[in-house]
Image (cartoon, rainbow, N blue to C red; front, side, top):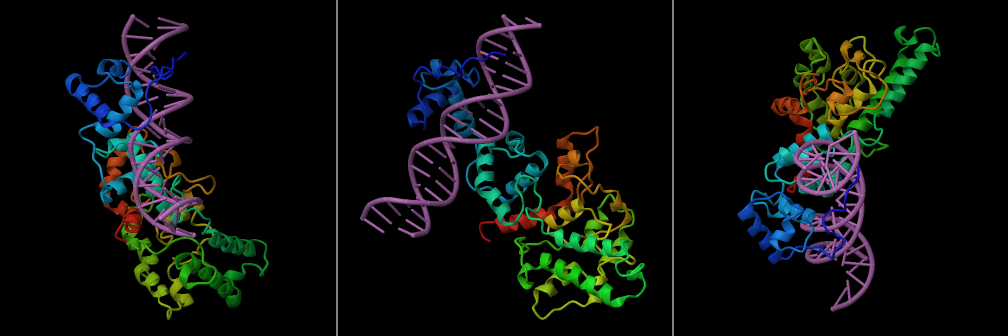
Length: 343
DNA sequence: AAAATGCGCAACCGCAGGTGC
DNA sequence: AGCACCTGCGGTTGCGCATTT
């Protein structure tokens, strides 16, 4: 389809910053005639500007309902959540932020929030942890699986009371997990920032997890050590968790990292600043390959605190449900704590 | 004090969808 | 059906100010 050049941009129209008198002309014209017909507007209004430029100036700067100044925490939270849901759909995001323009949100994202997320080790595009910080767990998981599978330690060694090998593997696993949870307290620190981790009790999360059919039981298993206590104790240099304490985090007959949790779920959980917190059978249904998307309708995953996108509903409905779900606030709150100017 | 560098933001550019003739 | 035009969107640019060297 053919398309003519925008306005009269080849005929010496002015570009660059707008002068106050140009603003005045534009506002005066729109006050009198309303806006629209941008192509013809410059001639009628006596402006030597491209119609597009006039529209942009009005929409992004002169409009009376424009809201300026620092983004509030609530606005930031909304932007982050919507960006996770919609991606770089700035105009759609702007629809949820009265008075903010798509351009302003885009600029704010690129200059402030994107940087903060990178500092947190979170990919601002995918909203996933940027580094492969969970690979150690998977490595150990694979080692365990291999050890069992190929009979390296004898047939079913782990289940035949070979305490030394089992404990060694446990130790390695716990050590690697501690590296992830508290890099500053452990050797081999990594870049994942845990300073603002939200250690919301697991039970609260499980309670709203749509894929966990037995929340009380699961919470009981996993809260043998309260994550609040666990992580705060770890940050205390005097604390050295015992095998029993750490191991009790996991349910009976469950070898952490072996089969129960997919890479996607691990990424999601730790990205939200929490330990992997549920290992119920239901999670086996989560696909273990492919890349995660935080967009529920594209990933097909049920995330804690979110609602599954049904084929009959739209993104906005899901978003409103998401906003109403108070249990979904935790990870964003921690993010905002970090991005707050006062922090 | 001056130059270099970094940063934030307004504005520009190209493209695509929608609409009317 | 095809064309021209209008409008809106998202990526990018470049200017001006602030900070650092």
